Each structure stands twice: as structure tokens, then as C-alpha cells.
Image 1 (cartoon, one colour):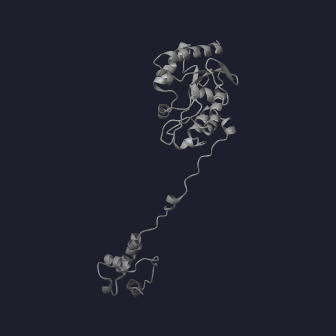
Image 2: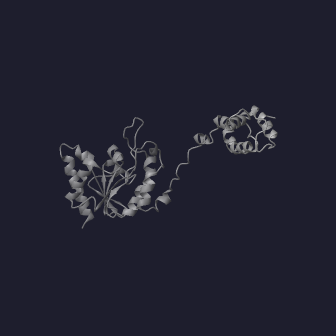
Image 3: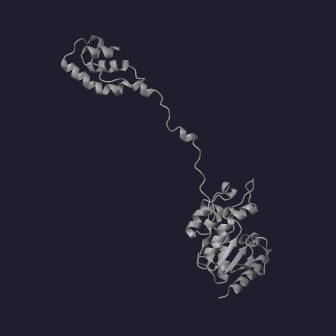
Length: 285
């Protein structure tokens, strides 16, 4: 029996509580000695008042007695979190699911898309912009670095030039025209340089473009650049100066604004003007 237990037994109090496993019995004596301001060994027959005082102090004994135990490192109950597997990848929508989305749902789906490996290298996605009820669609192939950075189709000087081209045929980008890409992510090679999209990447992103097309229902599509002209109807050889069909929409090919900005001779700009006039004539009214 410990000396604290002997002390309580001598008082006729008996054991009032038991130490938790691992607690140091000596800690009780330290607290009791501090409460009585005398060593336990010197207390022989305490007065009733002393007993009451000791019992009052014993309420704090349980806390104080486990100081040594509390100081012992406690296993981290949250350590499992570090080794827990990552949360599962968000469920990807099927082609059928995408075909049922509205504009907001389509934008949200594109933002979290992981249908191909471009999701591993992209810095952002680029959704279309402009009039979602416009009768004209301006279509490029895939986003550039500037577009990826700004999250906006044809920003900066490219966008200004396109706006001027549209104004030349009495159109306003914010009212009559919707601008988008066949792909919503920028394809990069292992060196981080822009590259052409693979067939797998183009196929994975195609349902998003087709849903844009279904929601927009444009009368006229102007493809910007050779890749967009070739990609809009895979397997069909594009040609400038001719009108093709995609569903109920007329398709006319022209140059990408970036190429026109680099045209120092003015020849490409003259051809682009002819393309726009053809599209306007085909569109009518």
C-alpha cells in the first residue's frame, strides 16, 4: 500500500478514488503535502477540519496527479489522414450527360473536365464567350497561352482585330457573335511548347463543342485558321472560298487573327475580307 493510501486509512476515510493506469502514486502525496503545508509523514491525527480541507483538495488531485502522464507523448489520432488515399476523381460526364447540359452546366463541366490527359498540364480552361443567342459562330482550334492565362477566347490584339473584322460586316461581337474553340485546353508537348491536338484529345473534347453548337444553333460558322477548318468536319478536306454545311449551319473558312497580325504584305487580310463577304452573303439579312 502506498503512503498516501496509508494516510487516508489512518484518517478512517479509506480510498475515495483509484489512480488511472499509468499514473504515479507519488503525485498524490506531493499534492496532499502541498495542501497541508506539512509533510505527509508528520501528520498523525488530523483534526476534522483538516480532513475536510484535504478532501476539498483531493478534487484537484486527479488533475494534478496525471501531470506526468499528460506529459507523455500521446499517439496522434489524426495520423491516419496523412496516409489516407486521395479523394476519388470527380465523376466524368458521359457524352449523353453532356448533351443534356444547359449553358451553366456546360461551363461547370468544362472547368473540371478530365476526359483526356490535357487536364494534367493545363493551367486553365477556355470556355466560349459572346452572345449565347447569336446567329454567328467564330471558331478557332485550341487556346493559346494568352487565352489560357486570361481564360478568355481571343483576348488582346487578336480580339480587337476580330472585333474590327466583324464591324466591317455590320456585326458586334458582344451582341451577334459567339466565339469559342474546338478544344477547351491548350495542348503542350513534353518541352512545354504548343502542339497540335491528338485525335484522342479532339474526340474527348468534341461533345462540349457539339453541345455549344446545339445550344447556340448558329446560322453561320466562320472557322479561324486551318486547324479549325479541318477539325470542324473531321475527314472532310476544307477549302477557303467555298461554303460547307454542318447541320443547318453554313461554314466558311478564313485566317486566324493571329496570322493576320503577322501579315506584312496585306495579302492575307485581303483574302480574309473576301471570306467575310462570302459568309455575310451566305448568311443573308
